[in-house]
Image 1 (tube, rainbow, N blue to C red):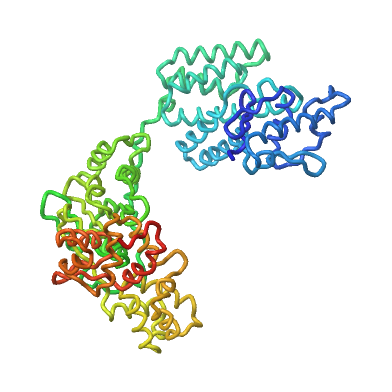
Image 2: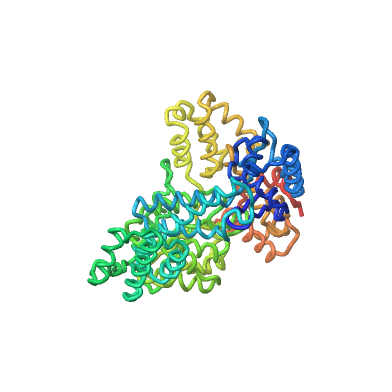
Length: 596
């Protein structure tokens, strides 16, 4: 259900569930009393006094109950939960704050935020909030609503609006604006002719706009009105301003425009892991390829590999290693190519443009225009762009810079050879020694050293896959009372291994299932049959699948690009152990699973 919206800063309007709730003027007055005291109990007697005052009818209690009943009926028509916004409590009635939006309360909140900005010297932010608050007004507050409380609230809210507008206009003058302040101050001075502060602001605005004679006329008019209505002269402050205008005081000139501060370089790289293990050759190879540009295009480094092999962790470590070489910033985006809905390049570009200081309202709508603007902003700048989890070349190409001063690091399950990377790095599993180091770094060195055989069993059961190793190690670390041997025994049972490799939202099976659900039907059907083979060549796969060798090769390569098969070694393809377990058991629990 949409919440209840009460508009009081103009003609009173009640909306619930996208529809107007009609009501008489007195019913609006009842609602206004409750809305301006949201969350507070208002008794029937208080409602009668606030709405009718001395002219309350003898049957005012029944009249109040009737208005409340009609309001509940109108609000409740929006849905079964809507009527709960207006409840009876403690001998009175309450409009609950939950699900309630009152424009008067929002105005006061924004004005308070603006005032805090003003007190801190943050003029542009203060003006933005003041303007946002003032835009809520659509006329005189509580227009057409009768009653003594409505009259008092009208006067109170009008005073708050005038103060907010005066402060906003003064700030805009200080920021060098003249056109809007002159227009609005002229109307305000006509409405409040005795307010010398408004006269002074209008005189200043006119003078700074080069309209000195008109500024002096405003003073003359103020002097005349004050003399006729109050029999007094203008105050000393207005007289001093008049004299300064006559003398063309240079300090009254508009402030010199100041250049907006340069945006801070983006620093979007995710946090590094403290227990990073292995990859002694890969990190420097990536770092060198990113920083040693020799052509006219930005170097592209591609890290590809199977699910859970540690592509993101390696990319973040390598990117952080070369941060100093990219002083103009580092951009990072998750492209979600292997899970869920892949990110749209246009959305990624919008985020990058904002990070590079482009105002939101100046970001183009079309993908091509965003790409052009992105490349223009990067021209001559040293920026590193990390694109994590790319789906294909088509998703990446719009995100590439135009010159050679930047560099791009891409991770993907597929081997995106169409990007013509300066370095294509297929990432394999950790060595047994590195796997043991990662396990010990998370679960505890002493604990693993005390049971080395069990530790070896765990690393083998995890297939030396970093994702699985990290889940297993985190699970051990979270359960210090477990023996390593007992956990190794649990993992040794293949029927429960995938269930054991789960900790909170981190799970190997989840990654495998998301990849499986994105497979075309022929690849999904082939996976369980290929999992029955320890490894295979294209001819052996063709025999197992009952297809031609060419078709089998396409299926094998498709599964490699999906991250479910290892890249071929010496012409033979291998289904990793955890993928094999999923294919013969877990895939059956995946929607759309098919054995072919």
